[in-house]
Length: 422
Image (cartoon, rainbow, N blue to C red; front, side, top):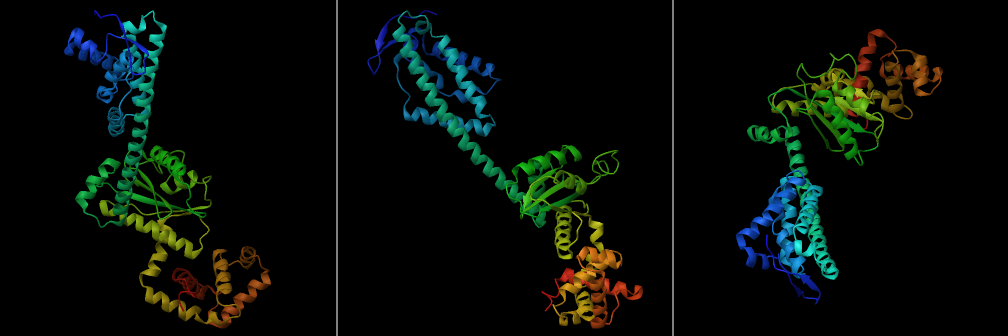
């Protein structure tokens, strides 16, 4: 392609090679041929970096050509246009690294196709042109990356807000069903399938949880399959939602966790915040099924804490008896007051005697084991059991009366008696 040789001075007085700028090239070969030349450079750069959209170059190439020939620095409005392209790249899901590669590749290809610059014998002119081009590249890439980072940060915050709102509505169970099913689709949840919810509460607080969530999500996806899996946080707890169909990995596996609860327990064994307590709700179908399973798991955590259960993993079936007790709260309150009410008059209050009953029943009615758990002598435990019999009229060592006393103790723990029962 013919070009005219010659030199002229830019704004700073430095000599620049003339012949292929936005203006001069148009004069030589026409606007259409000039535009096609730049379009060809853009397509070549896009192909080199994996077909990143050409549209993200905008007017970047004319800026480079102008700088190479005349030394003109980019204006503020032109750099603002580059920043808008950086935001556009973030919206399209193009990484910052890919769009930077596009810009660098375009600059290299354009420089190679500026023959009067590359082949010039005037070394000062070549150095000046190169410096001008590098200045444009530096300014453009800097604005591009900053805008891309800001836009990506905003998108992440927006996506996280949508995710949090969706999870809140999903677990609350009172949102519009049709709209909820639409919002569930991007998260891969099929609301027509039965799901189960597991909760994991750390003893030391959740703290920095991103790494823990990511690791747990990978484990749950591997266990349940890359579908219908959602791992998040709510109220300082980790939440895992998985399908509960018969084809989901579970008891049929030859090795590995047989249930969602066992999986979480294994994965969180060495995670920060130990020890963890995990409860799992039973599976239910439909959009309200997730909310119902979550409520069971949440209620299970509360019960496990009140009862002081030692087990880290509490299955929903283990808590059925406690739900039965709480179903008729006036009746269980009456039982607690009738059987244990007089313990509040003991020296030191009712709590030491309740702890003794807890340990005695947990040890299967073996006094020596109860003493070991309480770090007391067998004589001290025997004395306390006798004192309970004197105050209440019920003998916890008598098999005929043991069930009544045990049910009353469980009710007391569930109700928070005597602190909340006064």
